[in-house]
Image (tube, rainbow, N blue to C red; front, side, top):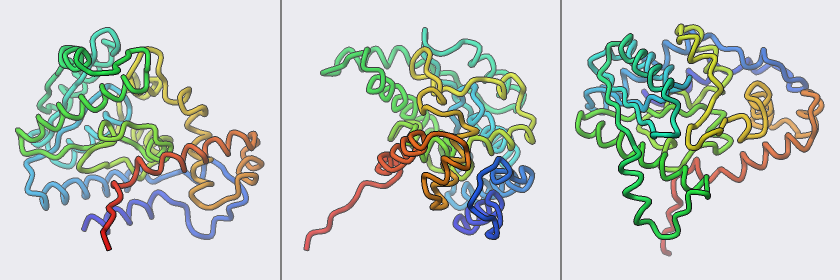
Length: 286
């Protein structure tokens, strides 16, 4: 059932096979948000039922992706089967984000927990060898993994599945923490590019305040997705679409009127992060 549903979602979100890949435009990424939402909700219901779980748990950041997942889960399963968890860090997380999370959780009438990660983070980093807060990426990854550890504990206590909130653009670019925000039992948005998530969010009537936010992973002050990846999502998604459909790099650059260097850099990030999307290899002895 899971495979069939995922295939149908891909069919809904992909253009027909007669599209000539000599051009790239936003029309290629247009989806039917009503149908996509229906398929994702069907997938959620089926997966929860088959797993014998009582519901799902979602890490809610106040951003677009986690808000979309929360709304879809609430519609699919009902408020009693959805747990929202806010995991802010004092001095780093924007307080307004947590206010937006609380407001959405209240609107959805779901169970909500707020867990401040600063105390356990301080305890852990105080005993870590080689720890250096100035090494932003390594330090940020600790935060992402700590958040997922807390989320899984709460999910375990409530016999719930953890829903991931990463979208296809982030996954293809490796813009996630392995065993952190990249970990989950089910990833409802993994088949959708970021621009498609925006389309889905508009259909679901996600609050305008959340829709208008500048996307960020929130691991350190001033961190924003598009700046970290070096290209805006609207352009990035078309580059990724071209690459996934085996369009030559120079044709993508020409079609989008951008430098070949930008396309090559994106392609390199996509290829070099492949290990993050794969299960650890298993070597069998002869």
